[in-house]
Length: 202
Image (cartoon, rainbow, N blue to C red; front, side):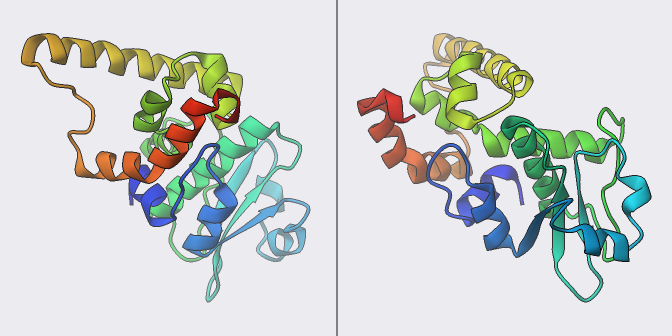
């Protein structure tokens, strides 16, 4: 599943995205390193945890579990969990395997999971509907880290510039060309309308 398909499937209707709801709907366990210590120890994963913010592990004859370092800031923790949900939804992990890699890895799967996390936590069509394009506004609405908010804001600026060019050249927007994008916007629309009416709730 793509990030947008995941939001649709899990019935997410507002920001910030409820990652616990997504994990529950997908049947993924969600535990801090402290909560999951015995499981981590049982499968011999302790030596690999140093420097890792989180990872996904598929238990043999059991569920997939996302483990995360509890000391992270809220924004970083959200991105870590969303990144691991991306690994799960894109089928990156087989039974008995894990995603214990390091941030900054050149592995294409890591880049794909980063993109998934960004689209899951800050879907562009929803940000556009809310008229959010500054790092601060996006950080506040989506509960992202400062860096993730800056990246999301830059993405929105690029999309808005492309949209203006599309309107100038072809007389039509480049948003909502995808049926999935339109369905996602419609799913969030009540929240978007309420937030625009009461901006402090966005």
